Length: 88
Image (cartoon, rainbow, N blue to C red; front, top):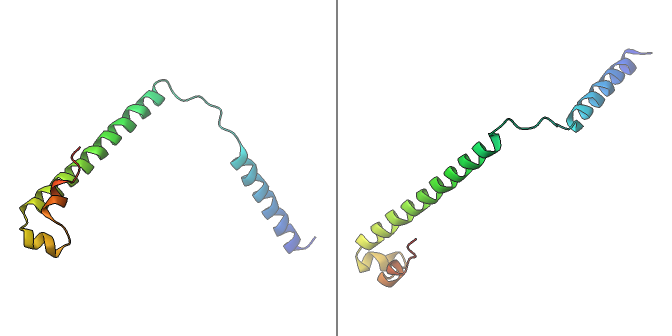
């Protein structure tokens, strides 16, 4: 065999090994409490994101309320638009 043929054989063997490792299933169960911990962290993250969105909307409403009618008109809004922004 030539060096090139041997190199291809080694590469093929490596590719086959990597592919078989990628297809292997992971059957070990999660440690006790891991799923519950994940659920708690996910809910906390959801609440934190909701609070951040609420606070950003609150700051925006506050800044727009402080503007004069003329400034609001310049950006294409009316006082009624600002007052009708949803509050959650």
